[in-house]
Length: 251
Length: 139
Image (cartoon, rainbow over all chains, first blue to last red):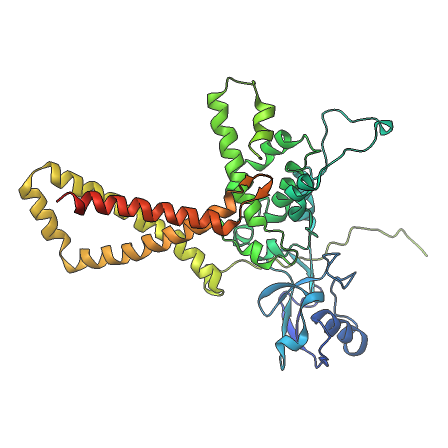
């Protein structure tokens, strides 16, 4: 296993350390890293938590591909060596640990929560939803914020101001939610150049997504929605029907 | 301890690797993507070529003959052959994109993406046959 090492106090560049690790068939790349840290070199730094594809912490570049290391089996790369690098397109803090503040800020900027014009009091009960209404957004709600899509996206690499695949897919997750009324608020953020229009549909975000969220699809759908809203803003008199059109174009 | 300790935030030096100009050569999907982007240049060329053809036709039989002679030159022929390849490439990737952007609900069920792409291809075939019929069937 070749592990990328970046030690800012020692060197300005990335070096690779080679470790011999066992690879029983049930071992994933993350098990290999844990073995290295436990047995060979305790200074190797990387993030992980759930080791079951839910927390989204252990995304790394494995043999050039963005992967969740907890779901990437070592045996598939036998006899190796398998090359483990930090996620691309993010600043590296140390070894395999990247700085994710940019993504976190972008995620918050698209308001990925349910926005209501008027909140119902708790006593009025829950907001009900049919199975079909759930299906409308369920795929996009599977995102675990692992940022593999950002790592695969050359647009994000070239233009770091791009809001990026996961944040747009999550905005779409709330736009398509029947309980949400925040579509119009999100439109202003998403329809900027740095929003959906930054995307040139490379489509790799969808390919690498471990949860089959299809962010590329979400962005293309949203381009259609935003175009329709823009077109209608010419046809429909100013102000009138904006609310309905924002919601209607989603259907 | 004598004196005051001074504290300051420790901020590790982040590594920010720059993307190489040739980033797209590393992976096949990136190469395909760049080819698809480049195809737009050839689409633009075909539009220009069509306008030149229309102008030649409007100027009479002589100009049209000259245009055909010019088009038969190996260099122009080669350019048009390459353009034709890229136009087909552009068309296929464009139509394959359609189901990504169009999510059509029919009686509460999502229309399968393959059907949307298929309908787009069918429309292309119908339009092509119609054009071919207008051009060839009219004789």
